[in-house]
Length: 68
Image (cartoon, rainbow, N blue to C red; front, side, top):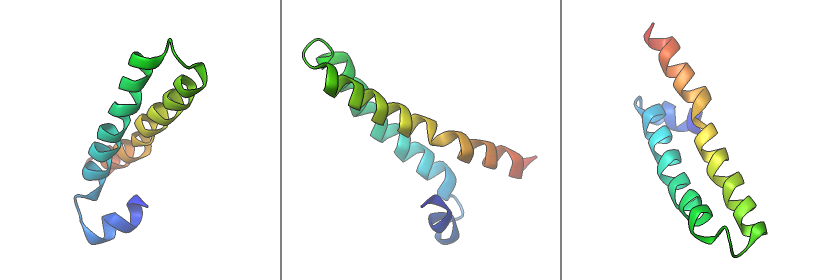
């Protein structure tokens, strides 16, 4: 997905990283607020939040390697 966006916008990598971090915030807030109520929804939100946060690793390493 981000490769296609990079072709249209040269600053696509930082934008995708920022959007992924912003999308992970609601999932992690739900984990903190509703962890006592539902164990299944807690694990689903942990999975989604961590997946969105970890999706930045490849982009950040790619951005650092291009600049060096």
